[in-house]
Length: 99
Figure 1 (cartoon, helix red, strand yellow):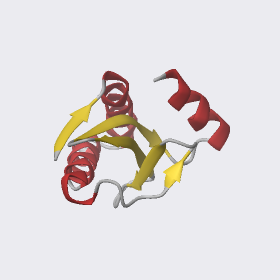
Figure 2 (figure 1 turned 60 degrees about the horizontal axis):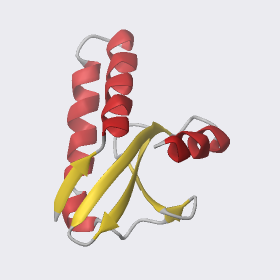
Figure 3 (figure 1 turned 180 degrees about the vertical axis):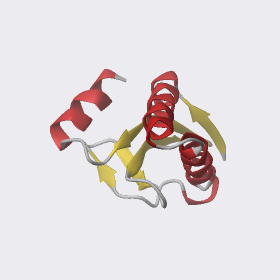
């Protein structure tokens, strides 16, 4: 299955990278490596995750408190957002409706 990371999700990943890089040197790189590994796993496991906000599957990251919001279309997985789970659900819903 093909993976496509939309621009909004790429910006989310960059924001997460910057946050963790400020916490500790090289932690941002580890964050990206971990999240890209979680995203790659969607090639096998896309569609098995619970649906949130009526239309997005949510895959939780294994190492960081982040969730990957995606949709499955034919033979493609579209990543719409990669968001911090510590945010309020209302903020997450608003962020997803902007994508």
